[in-house]
Length: 402
Image (cartoon, one colour):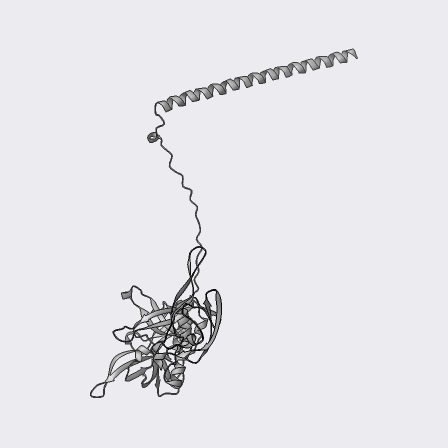
């Protein structure tokens, strides 16, 4: 028993001795590390002070490494544009070219021979010989010839035309024609396929077919000239980049189904700084004009009775927003009051709605009126101060049409 106690005591003392040695060695290491660290630290301070004092770190002598450019390869998304099958264009052209005609405008010489002085294009709109074209193509024409793609030629009679919309109508003596199919110009969108067919530069009996897209809607364009007494501003036009050349006036603008959506009327040329801009009168407007010409011999254009200007509202960020048409004055010949004036409108009122359609621009208001006729009932909302007033009245006849 005593021998065991002695051994345990001896073992304990041995372990304590070893522990003391380890602890003492650790303290020595720590002490040595601290001495080395402090020595290095103070040595570094002395060296850096020496270098700064002698200008070793002057700016011009510091050379920075070239920046490392990290590049990442980005795979661009492929933009897939809708493709039009060429067979669709072929089918459209094959059918439509039979209904797109060439118009030759001329006069008779002393020997009663036809002398061509101009021309354009036209579109057959019914089987009884009616052909729609542009006003400027047949304006003041005395003799008109119509030539089909197969070479057949007919004498045509001018039924009538309208300067404000650049639409005209002629008729030939043939009641077995194939008319064009009509589309809806209110159901087209920017980016839709557009096919233009006409007779540019009188190149021959067969028409020229070009393709593009609907570039914009509700465009306005000043055409004609004051010196020629034929200046007019056209409103609500369809803009297309389908190539249209002189001589194509009065031709067809078709949709992807081959339906007529517009009558080509004008081009913007390089002398005004623009190319590839063609314009067409929407077919919905054009057919209304044709109906008036056939019924009354002229178009009974509506008259609102104002001189208007663009009205703006100012947003919180200071931006000006198109938001109506301000009535600058009630207008009419001999200072007579017309239409909206008779209904109670005053100078300074702002037209905000027409038949529940929000009015934002003056061009929009004029476009709506071009589709109206004298005698049509209309509802207009005006802003007077902070009050909205509703006016119900009948549109008058445009004074120049009386």
